Length: 407
Image (tube, rainbow, N blue to C red):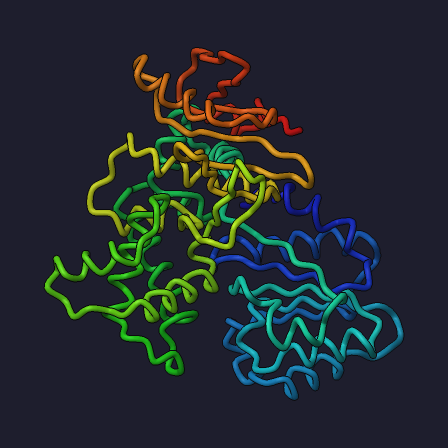
């Protein structure tokens, strides 16, 4: 049983027949393989048969010998027997050395439509970017959004209201397979094993020369503090409190880069609202899924606004918006959300439980002279909109019942 990942299919469909390599990137187990199957199902209705569909999952044992460009090219071209168009699906292609050479060759010499997936956010960088410039298009695939999670749980027969499920989603995130488990202990075990698998396959490999103990401690700290302002000094103090050997700044940044490439975190830059420009300075890190944050946090406070910020950030990214942390001369705005030349400003709160909280969240926009729309998102059902600033219930926003307007 699975749900149609319609949000992504809508983005990819216009490029089914385009003379471009379709690249799907995202964290392991987020549903990229199932999405490939859904694309295949749709394209089969256009007349493609088994003889003209070539599929390789590089985590499948039967393909373990295809580890370099030469063997991959030989296998694929050996399957091509005529001039008709072939569909080529290559799942987790980063396992093949110099795979970009094969893609470039296939793109130039065969009649094919190529779809690939990879668990590396920088899959289109380096050599691949040079060889395939202008020849590929990337789609970032996220774990289940809240609306997808809600739809999937209904299919599974789970009798939960949207508000009840949201509490579960805050804690355990949207990794698709985790919804098939009923006990929290089993969910935690699955997410933890998935997380450790990502470390083993994508980060702490034989060639990486990474100190596993140090990496896990730093990664755990970053996950547990996702959404908070980032500081190398704070990580140093954390190690000092543990009476551990200090890790130098260069190593910390290297570990952050590894986590980002493995699609575990996003590093979010600052937007100077006064000057109306994006900065190069990385302000915060957000976990690609709150389940990964949960297993690295000893005690979860359901009122922790950073969990909510993380969910809103991931939702905005999945809608293809550019997202920044906003800075004014007096403080911070949670998000500056940009869609092309349009933008809006967003504050996230748990509940607007008193006048002091209301004044703080709505007052954060006072230093902004920009007339772009401003929003406060919280769990409250009562509408607190005022002074031209709109208030939206978080669950309604995630389910698509309310949306952001931009100018």
